[in-house]
Image (tube, rainbow, N blue to C red; front, top):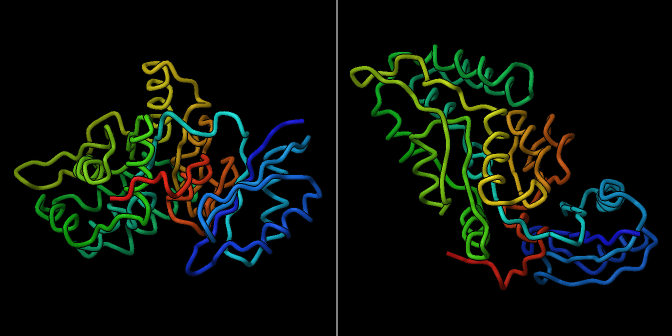
Length: 298
């Protein structure tokens, strides 16, 4: 028998978690469990001893809760709180894909978004897609990046609370993106990440050359960062929480002890051991066993 924590997460206002949901899961699993409410009408842990896998328990819970807009994630009860957070940026901690916003600003939105969608689905490699998109944007004025950042970029709900809470409780937090350092540096500072990584655009006389400095930071680089940080900080992959939304995040998600597909409907969710479909980024705190009273709200 293995000890698990099955975390159910709703939204206190739009999709509250009620005792009836807990009862439905109890009946579905047909297992004794202890409950611990992490936040009233929002999140609850069910502690279970079972021979089933985390995947099987999660699947049963999600099936019985279908249509309720409530997330269910099962994890091992031991080692739930992670010591390293490695996060994607675009469509993960911000609402946008920065490169798509840049393209919109110069009238190339449709062409660029088609390429972005293909790489998120995993149809083409990230490096190939990046080169294609930058080639189309050759000659873009550097000032457009500033305008896009100030006028078009917004933070995901719960992003700062996630980073600040994990940091407060001793985790190292890094933003690792296939996007551009112009944006990662600013977003990392706003959210409180310890460090950031991204791709460096090349400009000549204030105009984009259509190229990026090598090596291109893609899925392999994200995985390498995870491994390197584990070595530097004497951690193991089981100590890592990795979160992302697309195919470019698969390798780091697979390697992490807790790999979360956040609002992803494509290839990533098949490779992750946790999916958040409805909740905001504070859901990642609940599935580590944090109570709402422990959140750092800023």
